[in-house]
Length: 141
Image (cartoon, rainbow, N blue to C red; front, side):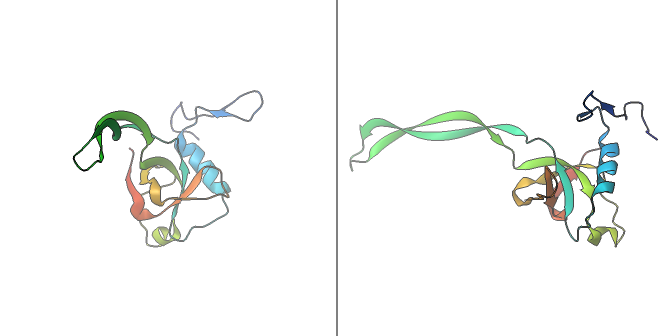
């Protein structure tokens, strides 16, 4: 049933936490339980947000005035962690518009990188989003 020995499911004693699951096996299982067909968007299980370090410049007043009476500022650089504009996710459903023409670029269980700004939360399934095909940047091998 599983391709690799690591592709198995271990349940804890309460049977409410799944650990060490191959993403393909889990995606196939979950996809089979979803009773929706999507016309033009992928249904993607969102993975945790990537945080990146970004340097920002903050003007701080230095107490001096120029010849016109405007307050002068010094530029202070600060590194902060912000959310990346890109996000990763696991494909759960493929849009009907692609399956009807036989496009097999993406399959259920593929880990994809997409632009998060245009993704729409799909509230009927926890941590799921609708992602248009042109917003997917790449897939992981």
